[in-house]
Image 1 (cartoon, helix red, strand yellow):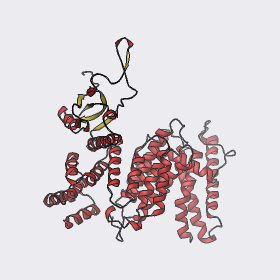
Image 2: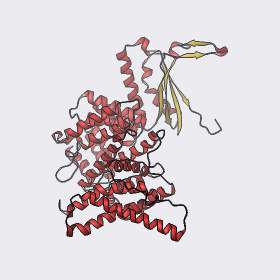
Image 3: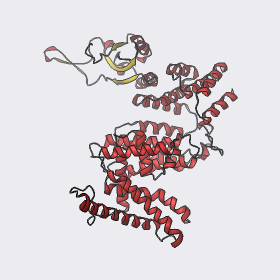
Image 4: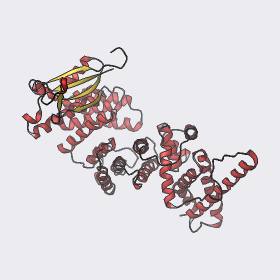
Length: 117
Length: 408
């Protein structure tokens, strides 16, 4: 069994949606995570709020967010257990973030500490 | 109370106090001596009371006999150590300076310290439960065996090994240091939670004994609440959870001792006083930032004290199970989450989720699938319920599923 990180890339929700809408998204996200956890495939996860965030560049230059393309900002991640990248992709397909046009979920395998990766 | 009934009653309530105080005084390596002294005090009562009558204050009588026997034991031990074995170092306290303090405060303190000793992380969970029942709840070997669906021999062996371990690990009977208390409390709470569940879900036919197991778990949890150093939010959450569950004792059994499922229970039999206590401790638990699994489970149990099937209720329960599963996976939580999902989003969606669970050796899994398919495909429903019956191990479970099949 491998672990994969599912990285959510999307716009800052608080700029485009009402608090009620955000709450509804939260609930959908919780149902999605709950479904993965009910299969005993959830490891951990965190939301990454857009406020109080910075990027530190080469030469010690510090800028405030947003970073790069607006739609590609990382808004959170979860780590899941999966037998294959395909299984992890199936989990990712259910992510409510994908309801937003242009949003994406990146699926990345987590390196095992086995000296090979 | 006649002495025939009084002695067993006192044995249950007082022997554990004597054992804790003497165990604390003599040290864990002499725990069996503490048990023997307590037992001898009761033996003396059985030999004396029928002829001389029950003393005015039976408890004080027992304490004073235990105190004298402990002093004799210490004297003999010291004489032996000095005159015969020539030991210089002595593991036992001296005789003259030793006061055997059976005051209420020392009894409570000793029991609390003993609770931490028997729930030491170096012991297996089974050993912890066995020791807690024996030393802290005053259960006999036979009762422990009945309650845990085991036999006397197994329990005796388990207790013997557990005490060996207490000795070899040199576990001291004391409250953990304040920096360790949260981690140690976690083990204690887990054991108390399992102790309660043993009573609540046990297949044992002895209803009184099962309820007593639950009440003992609650009493021990309350010991933690009474002490400032251990009165932490998760402890309150656990007691709240226990109160909510215990409130349904009356309602969950019919006159034949068969289990009545939540939906078929007569809610007028639910115990309002215990529900109020549950709410009280849930409020107490909400101090602080930490959200333990007991907080979530207590919240779920709270929602179950409201019988009406509202959307709000099931939405809340679904979100709580989502949270609980993130903290700790268990098949039963996964199944309950799916049931809550069916109440919020309908059976079609719940079936898709249920089929992802793949709990193929679990009869509850097939019972749930049978339920979900009931109004959608009665053939599939029947197949799932039949599979559930073939997997169910106990008569109670089989008969519950059979009733569902008959109702199709």
